[in-house]
Length: 159
Image (cartoon, rainbow, N blue to C red; front, side, top):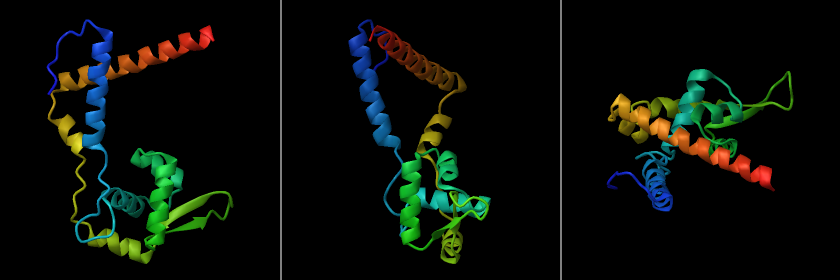
């Protein structure tokens, strides 16, 4: 664990932040291994469960709900479609719009895996922090992004 102190040197602080960010990403990225005894991953099951509760949705709507990119959602839907757990269907009112829906096998799989808990380790870790610490982390990350945006704006004006 990094010892926190006041980092007078911006380069050293940037290095520490970068190392922590990398460790955070490796620690909390969603698991890609299959759920024991199944051919689906936790992320696939999350998508199946969401469809089960919401009804047909577009890939974009799925991506928004799951907090993933449209490309990642498309890849998940492609993999689930190959397993015959979901199917795509065109909107009768707008042929450009495509919905994703559970097949009978997909509904059966959701029921079969109902007992599997998809605990998000990141949310669990954040829950262990005090509300004050959560506020400090959010404020710090927001300030870092604001500084990066301000710096980008300055660079754009110079070019």
